[in-house]
Length: 119
Length: 111
Image (cartoon, rainbow over all chains, first blue to last red; front, top):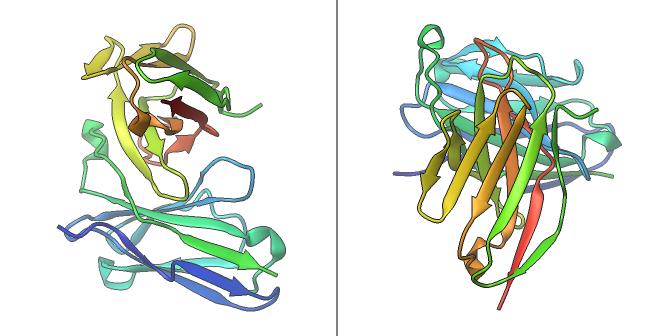
């Protein structure tokens, strides 16, 4: 079974440009998450989709970041315009559908990440 | 103060040694607890969930102390392949699935 895939693996852009990251979750996983790790810091949550709906976007840093998951399959994360502090590794993760009411917690499987460098 | 605190290490141990990592979390309402492993420039992978009763998976034992808000990971008979960064992770809010990560503890097992 294919794991979570992310594209591109690396991206180098200049400040002020736009970049779009893509994530393809494991087939059948309704939950999709975005995280990022900036230099010297811990991995931080950005947002969580359940199918095509944003379940939790409390970690999105500002309105320069836009995440979409049209059709409930793959997701994109667009940064526009990019700033220097956006440099880091952006991870996507997916998990099977769970019931929040029943408090089940399924494993989140991470993709290899996209390493973004803003110059 | 960070929500999840870990000693960054590195811990340098010889093969066969027993090593323990500790982690504290600040939110007493935290619900779920995990240890993830991350190899250099790779993605995090779940090592094990942590339960109040303690749990063991082969050479790995995890413990949770809710009263002290403290999580531990014990690795027995260390192998060279155990060299990695170990991330302490919690889910802090009921009804949410966002993972909150510690900065990680780096382990280097030496021959």
